[in-house]
Length: 489
Image 1 (cartoon, one colour):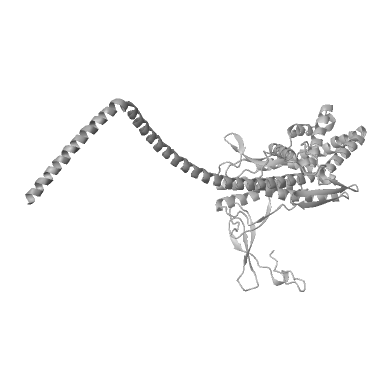
Image 2 (image 1 turned 45 degrees about the vertical axis):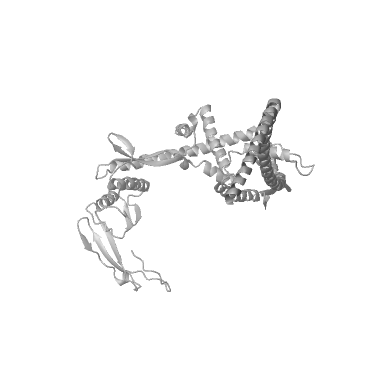
């Protein structure tokens, strides 16, 4: 029974397979027929459909990129709007700062200080109110360009402030001596000085113009006869006095050098003093000294004019350096011939004179300093008329820091120059063979005892002996109520 059903099923399936084969053959035939008739159009259509699909995918990709760019652009737009807002605020703040700076520059210009510093600088007009930005910027650039070399550091500012106070004090002193006044008005833009001159309040530039006009008028009023009198006084009296003083100084130097020649040192070192033009000597001093060594009667008109011009130049320079002094002070300082010269010490070495400040031993350096001073004192005392006149030299802490050999030589020089010495020293007793005689008072004291012990000694050039103590009757009696320290003879 199962076999029959299987056979029936096989038969049915075979029939169905044969029908399917027939239908497939018919469809294949139909397809072949269609391919032979419309195949080219279908292939083209299929290609276009493929291209369209590819373009569709490209458009989808472009759409996604465009959406991303839109998103990015939206973010950048937000940032740009925020920056525009910040820049607007910055522009507003900068504009306000510029307006404040322009107002400050206009306010500072109104003080007149800019006109003092840069008198020929053109400034915008002040009648129309606040300055516009363009002229104010042009003025600021011009000021910066012309003052670019000025030191504007904090240290320079402090120096200027200090000098400003000093100069204002000098201005007040100079004006007060002539009945005028000066007042300062400090502000955030600086300090303005107003001056009451001849009953009128004037600014500093106005005062300078008034003084210049007054000086020009006084110069015009000064007659040629008065100028001739001034020049004659300078040449005849002042130049004559300077001639005498310079000649006396040169003779004094020669006398001191004579003392040095007659009293050589034990080391054989030869010294001399030179009186020469100083490093700050006025220009033309050498020519003026040559003329001043001659008698004024022997001067030619050119010599007289040259000497007069030299002296007038010193007076003018002194007045330019310090205008607050009186005429007497200015003339005294301008004609002080001592400030034109300086002393120097030279030693004779290798056949020529060289500065004594060069390399030398400690003892030679001490002698180079001490010998000229002893010679100067000896030369000065030689002017005394009496042969027994005292020739006193006082030395405090004599020859401190000098070795014993140099001490002995220096004390021997005091004897060689015939000088009487009174000196104090912590350890020096001056008992050397070079010293022919000296009296010594040794002072001793003990803490908490209000007394000083005086021990006397004497040196005769070869031996030191205990000196004779004065008796009670020979001591000075202090006045009643005098509780000072005891005197040491």
